[in-house]
Image (cartoon, rainbow, N blue to C red; front, side, top):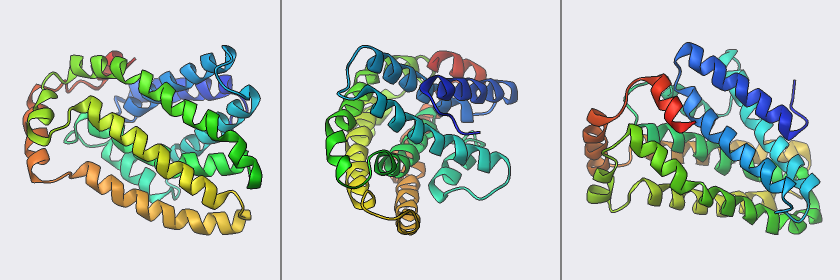
Length: 248
């Protein structure tokens, strides 16, 4: 049953996190991060941070339902989008870093889901009116990076190796991912907003292939970074519940 309010979304995410804890599943990593973001959006709406609070809540609900539906399809053995299937399948593996698990979720949710959610929330010419609040979400996410980085470093203390090898630390990677993803999402929102639902579904198949290709770069980012991830993994916390505690 689809969520209709932000409180519904948070309740659904609470359930996802609870199941992940019970199953000791890495699916809980992104779910916790996303729940933190959703709470921040809810607080921002209540504080008048956005130009149109009710519209922003509708956007966030449409946005969240795409993730929740994809997860439900995956767990039930039904077909889900390629990019989400890639992210969910990797959650069953120990090999990726915690950061990679998070980035795979961010990639699928922002690059694939956000533009579609925006187009459905504000179809046609209405989309232009949403641009300020759309960008404000990105600002809000950026504000959470320092806190997320601190939590991540407590369970993955050798993340500095990425800075030495690849020229980017975890904060820089997340900043790049969020900023670039926002721009991609808005361009796709502009492309999708004038379309009929049938045409939109066809375009989303193309977008799904593109975003899944980006997921491949997160899973295997090249020889030097792969070597760095191998080193970082030695010191990274392997207990799923402890990682979830740190992220939460």
